[in-house]
Image (tube, rainbow, N blue to C red; front, side, top):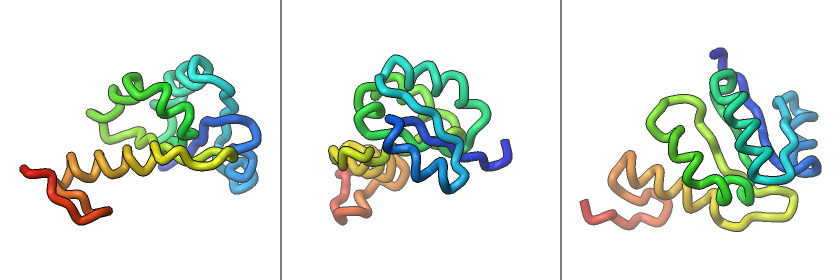
Length: 109
């Protein structure tokens, strides 16, 4: 892997990334997103995923937590943020660091 970056999301949401040179994969629903992620996971180090799709694929995405790559980041789509991406980031930091550095609260560990 050479640091390649991709985005998976609805067509309108991915256009700005595509214009910036990021590999863009349109997926209108979770089934299509799952198929794409299976196909591209070994080729890309960073994969941005629309929050709506990430939330629907929560259990499936857990399989990527044990490996260093790809890093899958949930981001808001053109429809706006659901807050799911922030929650995932917060949980990942708490798991890695034992504290919530976003809101300065310890996890009790």
